[in-house]
Length: 277
Ligand code: SKM
Image: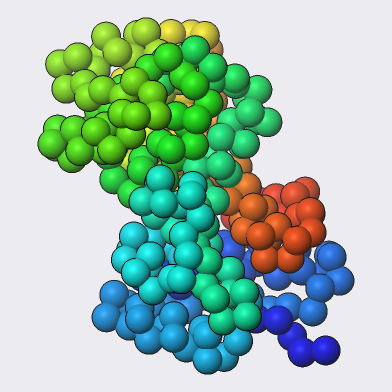
């Protein structure tokens, strides 16, 4: 039978670890499929989606900056993606394109498995109010934390995000002056900003000394695997949670939507970890 085609579209896309992770998963499962990375600009997005259909691709992952704009080209948006306001996984069902969001559920699953954190009744501080924060907020809210506090450089962006999710759980905005106190109370502090991302290896989004020792410090940045924020938090005695697990589990859920088969999680993790060199 023919090779089933998949890919990831984004701009930039060079850094993507999806091809190595997904091709290894298909190979391990004996599935005849190929997964490529495609550089697609904003102007090319509509053509790329039409091309995917014309060439019979079974699925795509969608990354920065297309996760919101791509929704306009799809036939159906899964409830979770609708609520998150972003799509990172497309399934082509015989020409019908269905959009899913696996970032949020991937994030929560990696939290539960890697640091065994049950969010029920917990206080969560999120740094940043961009696409990454939006992606995880819906999935976090469903875990019934007692409060989610959003801190962002521009408060009105955080206000808008908080308003969009206020039906799900208590979401409020903290300003710069209130951040230290909010952190001293938090069970988990999550960095969704790009602060600390390579090559700015020494930059931290906040002082890890503000966290309780019992708290979890979580960073969506996965390059480097351990950011300066996580290193400082670990020194302080906090449990730490890096961005690699989220990346793997968003891929795990995408694989399962596409193939209907359980994803080979360990194989995928090994492929990603090995590719960090
Ligand atoms: O949400 C994921 C996306 O599915 C794939 C990706 C990548 O290949 O770098 C990153 C994230 O945005």
